Length: 159
Ligand code: FES
Ligand code: FES
Image (cartoon, rainbow, N blue to C red):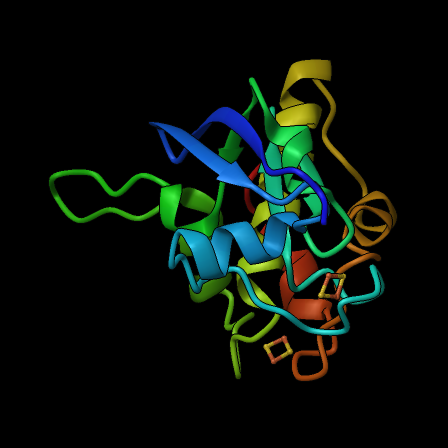
């Protein structure tokens, strides 16, 4: 039997210490250990992007990411996106709603986190992305409902 390992990390701004099996996946840590069910299990094979979260600002598939690798890092799930005291939600979420880019919503938490990472990188590099660059950025996030057009329009509206 493998020995459990203690990890320290920040999730959604909260310092957290847990002792976990070395083989635990990040999606299981998030959903089962911490009860944050916004991160969705889809294919569990790295193909659909429904499980996407941010680790140190980078979008990762939490179904393929060993939880011990968040030791010392910052994790943000969809629950960690800020809401202002006035009730304003994250601009990415707002843009998706405004453009009618959410239907069943199963893909949406992962889509939001991928877009967050992409927008942050574009802003850092001072780039206004083309529709093709936006499509490339979200190609790892499968959406069976929207046909992507409205999602791409929503992302364009953020620049
Ligand atoms: S559930 Fe992780 S990529 Fe599909
Ligand atoms: S809104 Fe249903 S899968 Fe994307």
